[in-house]
Amino acid sequence: MHQRLLTPALCLLALALAVLPGTALANAFDFYGFGTRGMGMAGTQAAAADDYSASYFNPSLLAYQKKVKVGLAFTWMDRHLKATALSDDLRPLSPVNPGDSYGVSMGFVLPFGGAVQDRIALGAGVYLPTSSLMKVQSVDPMKPNWYLQQGDADRLALAVSLGFRITDWLSLGLGVQVLGGITGSVEMSVNADDFVFEQRDVLVEVNTAVAPIAGVTFRVPPIGLTLGIGYRGSMKIDYELPVTIHAKGDFGDGYKELALVDVTVGGTIFYTPHTLTLGAEWKGLSDRLHVSAELRYAFWSKAPDPTVGLKVGLTSEMDLVTQVLGDNFNVRAGGEDIRLSDTLSVRAGAEYWLVPEVLNIRGGYAYTPTPVPVQNGRTNLLDGDSHMIALGSTVYFHDPLDIFKEAIAFSLAIQMHFFPEREADKSANYDIASYTYGGYVGTLSASLAYAF
Image (cartoon, rainbow, N blue to C red; front, top):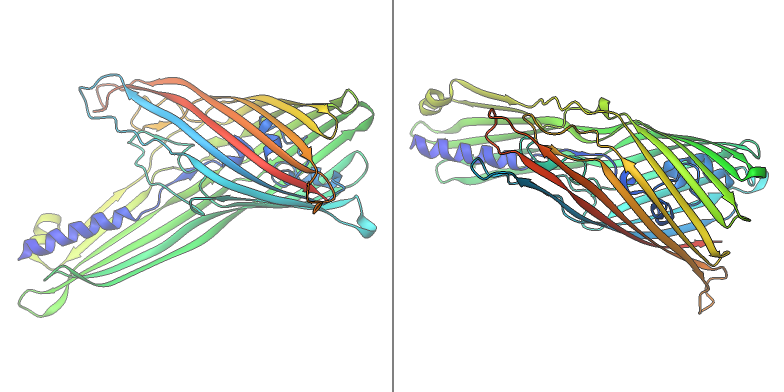
C-alpha cells in the first residue's frame, strides 16, 4: 500500500518538472533585423532607418521623417542547424535543433504638426509571432541545444520612441522596448487511494520587461553624410514558479495528507544585453546610391546563468517515504558558469535606385561573432560565428482601384546566415562523444508600406 503512495508522488514530481519554463536569450531584431528594407541591407539601420524600425535601432532618426508612414511585414526564418557525433560508442548525442519561425511586424511613423512640425516624430513597431505570442523551450544545458536560436523569434516584442530634431544637423531620440514573458504557480491535490486528482489549480501570468532605447544622429547634408549612435538597454525577465502537490489518502488512520511535494524553480526566462551601435550612411550620385556601415557592440559578458534553478522538497509522515528519502527530502540544482564574451559585429550595406522613386535594389554583409565558447567542457550550448549575406529590393506601384492616392511600396529581403562548423572536443571525463556543429539559417521578409 505504501508503494501506491510513493509511485504517484514520484509521477507527480515528474509532472511538476514538465511545466517549468526554460530560457530564451537574445533578440531576433538584433540578429535578423527589423523591417524589410533594413534586413535587405544586412541590418545597417543605426544611421539609415527611414521607417518604424528607427524606433528600435535609433529613435533620433524619426525626427527627420516628414510624412506619416505605416508598414506591415511578414518574416520567415528557416533554420538548418545540426550537431553530429564523431563516434557512436558513447551516450547518443540527441541534440535539440530549433525549428522554423514565422512572424508579422507592423508599425508607424507619425510626425507632429503645429509649432513642432518637422521637429518631433513618434514611432512604434511591434513583432507578433504567428504560431504563439510567446514560446519558451526548456532544455538542459548538458543536452546539445542552440543557445541563441532556441525560441529567440517566438515572442511578442514592442518598441515605442520619440525623435527630437534640435537643429538641421542634430537630433536626439528616446524610447522603450517591451518584451513579454510568463510566470505563475501550480497547486495539485491527489487521492493516493485511487490516484484521482481532487484539485488542479494552475495560475499563469504574462509579465513584461522594459528597457530604454536612445539615439543621437548627426547629419552633414552638403556631403550627404549621416552618423548615428544607438543604445539599447539590457533586458531580462526573471521568474520564480512554485509547484505544490498534496498527496492525500486513508491508509487505516483516517483521510489526511500523506505527503507534500514542493518544487520551486527560478532563473532568467529571457535576456538581451546592453548594446551600443555606431553607424554611418553616405548618399551620392544625386541620392541614387546609399552606402551604410555599422559597428555593434553587445555586452554578453553580463549575461546571467542560463540554467533553471531548481529546489525540490518532499515531506511525509509515511515510514516507507522517510526511510527511502529521509525525513525532509530536499534537492537543489542549477548554476553553470558558461563565461560568455562581449561581441563586436561588423555590417555593411548599399542601396541603389535603378529608377528613382520607382525601383531600387540593395544588399549587404554582416559578421557576428558568437559570445559562446567552444563547448569542450561540461555544458553543450551550441552557437557559432555568423556570416550573413543579404539581398533586397523595393518597387513602388499605384493602386489600380485608386483607393490610395500615393504609391504603395512592396519590398522583399532575403538573408543567408552561415555558421561555420565548430568541434566540441569532449575528454574522457564526459560520457558524450566529441561532435561537430554548424549549419545555416535562411530568412525571407516581405512588406507593404504607405506614406501619406
